[in-house]
Image: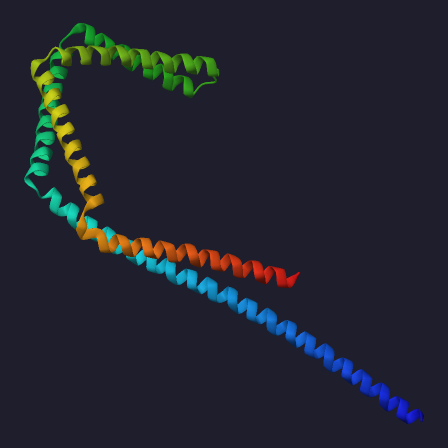
Length: 226
C-alpha cells in the first residue's frame, strides 16, 4: 500500500512537472515569435528606408541634370555675366573713391580717430578695466568707424560711375532671381520627373507603413512581457 501511494505521488509530481514544462515552453515559444515579429518589422523598415534614399537620390540626380542644362542656357549665362560685370564696375568705382578720400584731411582724421579708439580698446583688454569702461571703449570704436563709413558712402553716392554700377548690379541681380524662380517653378511641373517623383512618394508611404508596423510589433511584445 505504502509503495503504491509513493508511486501515485511520484506520477502526480511527474505530471505537474510536464505541465509546467509545457507552459514554460509555450510561453518561451510565444516570446520568441513576438521577438521575431519585431525583428522582421525592424528589418522591413530598414529596407524601405534604403529604398527611399535610393529613390530620392535618383530624383536629385535627374533634377541636377536639368539644372545643369538650364545654367548652360543663354539667358542664365547672360544674367550671370551681367552680375559679374556690374560687380567689377562697382568695385572699381569704390577703389577710385577710396583713393580720392585718402587725400582729404577730414577723412584722414576720421581714420586716425578710428585707429586710436581701436588701440585704446585693445589696451583696456589687457588691463583690469571694468565692464563699463570696456563697453565705452567698444562704443567709441563703433562711432569712429561709422564716421569713416559715412564719408565713404557719401563719396560713393556722389560718384556717377558708382551710381550707374549699383543700378546695373541691382537690375542684373533681379534678372537672375527671376530666372531662378522660373526654373524652380518649371521643376515642379516637369513631366520628365514624374516617374521619379512617384517612386519617391511610394517609398515614403512604405516607410510610413513600416514604421507603424514596427511600433505595433513593439507594443505587442511589451504587452506579452507584462
